Image 1: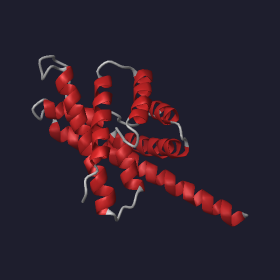
Image 2: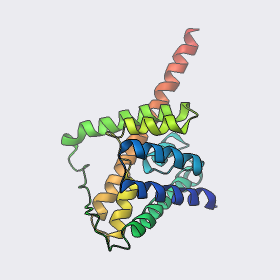
Image 3: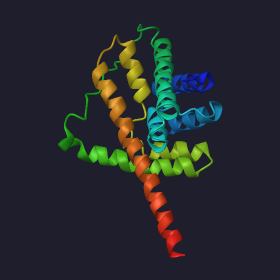
Length: 204
């Protein structure tokens, strides 16, 4: 597989910027930074949930073109987050009071509504992201739905890695599961859209 270094450098730079923003910004400021980063680092996903949406709505059988390339993007996002965290904390000299979020997938019964919320948010946000040419619309849509989507997955992984692996298993599982459920929602949204188009076409 040929590595696309430009795409991966864009992911590193964008994730660096977003992880830096996590330290001191609210939702509106983060939405603005996200939109600006998408403009500056054109083509970069920047957030793991975006990469997972691309993975699950792309060609699922194309292991090299879809899965490997997007897997490299996920890795680049974590690298960018790690770099920002190391600089922001002066290589651990400043305590961020970060602690890993517990793994939530282990209790399906208590988290059923969380999972359904992620799937619904993924379905709705992916429609906004793929239908609107404006990065502002996508960024604002994501902020509106952020209660149902974890947007700091790369930052959480980076914080765990730079904290000598503290909570790495919980962070890794959450990073994967958050992305999978939002990505599954994006796929569901695409399939519903295709079904509605087919129904509309057959009724004409």
